[in-house]
Length: 220
Image (cartoon, rainbow, N blue to C red; front, side, top):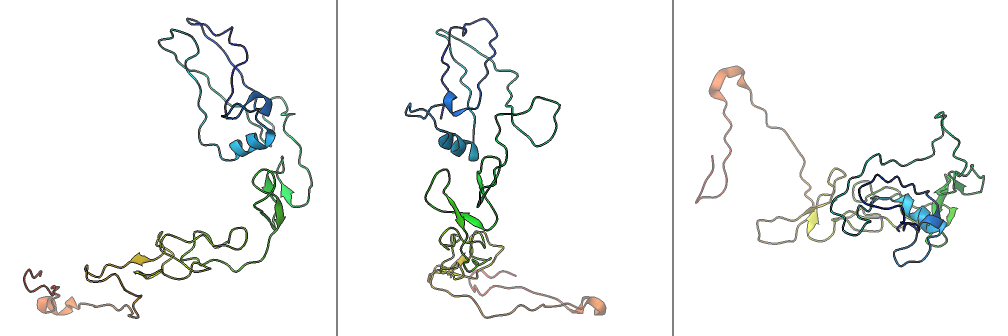
């Protein structure tokens, strides 16, 4: 989505130019040249990554500089400035919240149809996704869980083939097998942890030695 100046007669080199663009859909157009709609503008503002400002407007221009760049927004507190009359007041429509009905109310979720990001419909009750294997414990629309890289199952509660040990602290879910290059097949262990304690109360009589099973290049 972009804004094209309708009148560039004031654009000239060797002078300071102040330019203001109101955030209305009528001041923007799509990348294919079609006029922007309120729906498309709201979609852009809902997930805005960058705002690019063109720096070259005049033929033969060699250099330019930008200064005093600002964006006026509306806030719900008294700023001692003018009222943001363009901002809509809250509308009480079932299933929606926000000044422009841009969010779903509690108990509602986005469907995959309708304007904006989808119509807000009553949320269905689905089983919670696995806290260890899913990106979120709350399922997406339709009850689908978004699994981590190494997680599978309807609730993302299983390790896929060639992986083991699912953990909530692992951003990938499970750990890929690393069986010394011999095989890729593995499963979670049923071993339990224990502690090996050393008692130094008797001086240096107790010692701990760690070795490897590699007879050719032993490590001690």
